[in-house]
Amino acid sequence: MKLNDLRPVPGSTKKAKRLGRGMSSGFGKTSGKGHKGAKARKGGKGPGFEGGQMPLTRRVPKSGFVNIFSKEYATVNVKELESFDDGSLINFDVLKKAGIIKKGKDGLKVLGDGELTKKLTVEAVKFTNTAKEKIEQAGGAAKEV
Image 1 (cartoon, rainbow, N blue to C red):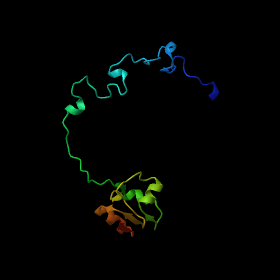
Image 2: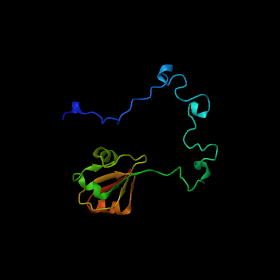
Image 3: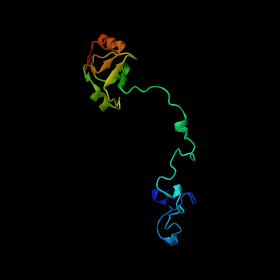
Image 4: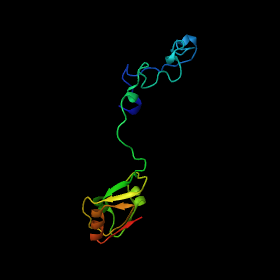
């Protein structure tokens, strides 16, 4: 079997409903929507519409508190820094290039899980106390940027 021999299983695919292509198509003029009414118009009833009843999203009370001043840090554990060469400088950009972190709006935070044996200079916005201790015990430096 070759790629050019592949075909979908009979009955598994349907032709698209081509709306508004003339009266003889069966879907001309009103394009299968009938005349007037909410369903005939743009947007229709839309998601969450419950026939005039108060929608669930509005019936259920809001709960909790969202702190608009909270910070979102990219977090990295000390054990993940072990993969870098001895004596190298590690910061947000280096970790992003290496694929260890994806995003962090407010910078990098280093956490203290795991062991570190290499002498590294780590630049981050925040360090936990244990992370700072482990980096300094290995002979490296923890700089807050």
